[in-house]
Length: 291
Image (cartoon, rainbow, N blue to C red; front, top):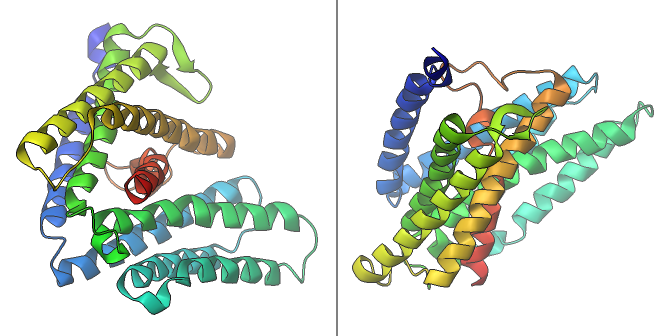
């Protein structure tokens, strides 16, 4: 009975995960067609706006009067700015420009009410940055050639790598925690997470990262270049970042007293789906754009 309780949500997790992976795989495979490229950009923008709406609900649960619509619009504009930044040389400063406009707009909306302005402006700006910037960077990972990063020939492989490392960390931590977990990782934030599960997820991520390195070297030479040592370090950082991202979103929900960020069937919410990726996307972005 105890084992049945441990795995009671496994079927639901498996169905949702498989469906999500299949849809994501189809979009990634055909992502270099212009129509799909535009569709993906609009999809990222929509997910960003929904995610910011969810963050705004956290704020409202804490009795903070945020301007939800303005936050969503600014987040959507940031995604458009990042896309234009990739496509056109004259739009290179657009993402920074949107952030400047965001700061000005958030201050402007508080000119009529001084009380709690510091916390309100700070929380609104945090929500925009927390969601919009990482999700926007997915486009720069998927289309590195548009970002003048020509030594990376195919961003789709890197995007698949990112998803796989994130998923294997979750899977390893889930099964490791259910089978071997004894010591709680962060009892107040996420009672089901264990130190043993986190370690197993960490190891799984490094192993899979090394596998990607070897496969890339022997089968996809020139399309996916990740030296062994780099694969170990990158896999480690992505695993740690992903698990911290998961805990970070749990922290926000616990503080707000909210169980799920949204009520999407079988998914919860955008922040629930992308919590770990919000931390791992920037890590991979900086790696492929600096190494």
